[in-house]
Amino acid sequence: MKMELELRRQTVPSYETILEETVEQPVECDALLPDYCPDIRRILKCTLTPVPMGKNITAGRLEVEGLATLHILYISAGGEPARGEYKVPFTRMMELHGEAEDPIITVTLLPGQVSCRAVNQRRLEIRGSVWVSAAVVACHSQQILAGSSTPTLQLKMAEQKGIRLCGSLSREQRLAKTTQLEGSAAPLTRVLRCDAVISRREEKWLDGRLLVTGEVLATAHCADQNGGWQYAECTLPFELAMDCPEGADAEFDVRCWALAPTAEPMQDDDGEYRSLEWNVTVSAEGKWYRPYTLSCCTDGYSTRYQSECRSKTLQTTELVSICRETETRRETLPLPEAAGEVTALWVRVEGCTVSPEGDGLLVEGRLGLTLLTKMGDGEYYSFDRTMEVQRRLTCGEDCRWEAGLECRGCRWEQTGSELTLTCELAWQGAVCRTSRLAVLEDMTVDENAPKENRLPRGLYIYMATEGESLWEVARRYNTSEARIREDNGEMDECCPAGPLLIPV
Figure 1 (tube, rainbow, N blue to C red):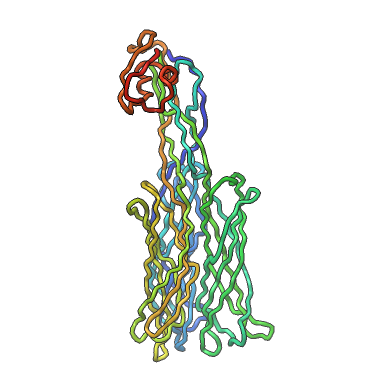
Figure 2 (cartoon, rainbow, N blue to C red):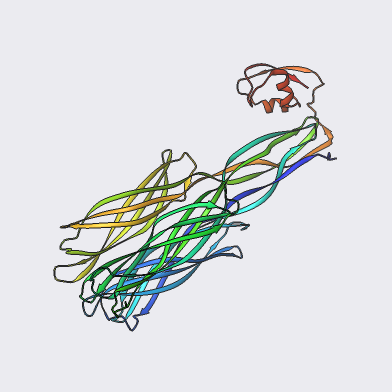
């Protein structure tokens, strides 16, 4: 017969990673040049820029929707650089390995390999891929024991403190601005490429909202009516507000992206194309972590009757630190023979991988460089280079770094057959570890089954060994840790070597 126990319970969250996977998504496009684009003579460069459009969980699967923008830089039949642009939507389904209760979803897209072939002067065949990295953490509410007022029931209490993952947030904002060309610059004919980066940002929590402010630096390489090149910049400030009423004591891991930048030549008051209309979308996503203290039961027994404990494992994503480090990286690259004049350079982050090293983690990033050069004979060619960068982080064992790498700006200078690069890099991301704790979910006592090893009431002497568990000694004698401490003075969880008085 089960004894009626006076047990106290509490509801606690438990976090489980039900998806952590990286897959390659094909992107293909057979396209015709728009009527306003000149005929193709030779392909210079094809790049792919993926943009996340949505993420949803349905029927046990994560659905990731994205848009791949394909940029084609080519030499026209007239011998001048020209461009084409195509947008290819894609969807990727990924199987979850558990129930998605209150999920926290993280999706990162990186460009893969891409190739472009001119079938004829007006038709292109493009084959490429996008690397889709996704993680889903489910939050389950669980009932566990918090204590008992039954005198004959002994519960071993443990206190766990830390900073744990609590939720995610996101926001987007569309920015627009019109700028004028400086001085007596020649009117523009077309924009060959437009890029944008988050050049500055900061965040703070205020009145129940997380405010993310900063600036986007947009750049454009343009051709003008004189047959020359012009480089234009535009700074667009932004402010994003995300609701987070419980974030007063939270820490935030926020990522920002400048997506789908465009720059279009516009007529000024004189009717000349000496203005640029800029558009870009700022997207911010973040996770937030809050301090917590959990007092729970990890073991138990009855001093009189046979008992049984039912336990479960609580899993929590613990925050170790948040990396927000910047550095200026300088590199000197040799140029190909007879490279001529470098007229434009583009930098993109191609990957970021993390691996354990010693007492910490090593992240290795790759920057892809594209150089557009004008040769001595007046012909344009493009060359690709890869720049390897590394960062080490000391953080202890069993940690993982959700590392992100940003290139917030790049300056270059050509000296003869060498190119000197100065890149402003930002390393970021939460460093976490998964904490697991076995706790009691329930306990039963059979009052029809007295303990066979129960001793008569009295005071016993026990010769303890150094470091022996006081809890196990109390359990063996069917007494409590508190009563042993009353007769022997204060001690921690481990016994000192020597005799102990054991009251039963």
